[in-house]
Length: 130
Image 1 (cartoon, one colour):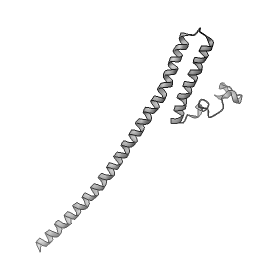
Image 2 (spheres, rainbow, N blue to C red; image 1 turned 180 degrees about the vertical axis):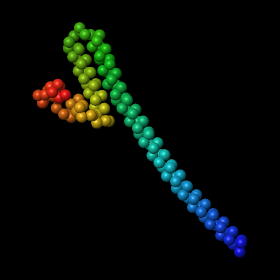
Image 3 (cartoon, helix red, strand yellow; image 1 turned 180 degrees about the horizontal axis):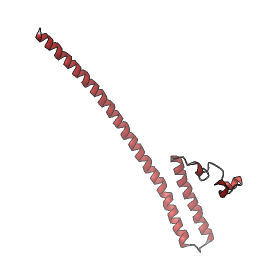
Image 4 (cartoon, helix red, strand yellow; image 1 turned 60 degrees about the horizontal axis):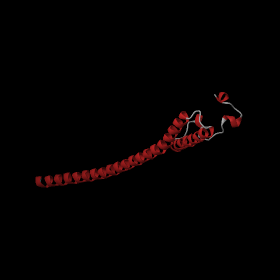
């Protein structure tokens, strides 16, 4: 009789251990899936930052170079200076567009990003807006 009780207890212990092992395997699979998802999201974020830095670096370098040219040619050809300023405007617009695509602007920057009419278009002045 004692042997039967011991066998039953051993079988019950083995069944409980097997159940616990199955639960641990399931948890391990879920953890692996979550880790893979996190790693995938991290790679996506790294790619996004890489692209954004690239998209911002080029126009910023262009604006810097054009500002140097303007400083060196202050008394130069007005037409050439206007060309440099136009190019700076294009580059700064690219920077603003990249920023607008990634992060919505605060309400007071709507004019800069083109979401609202400029004060001059509404008849207001900057001082009146403050």
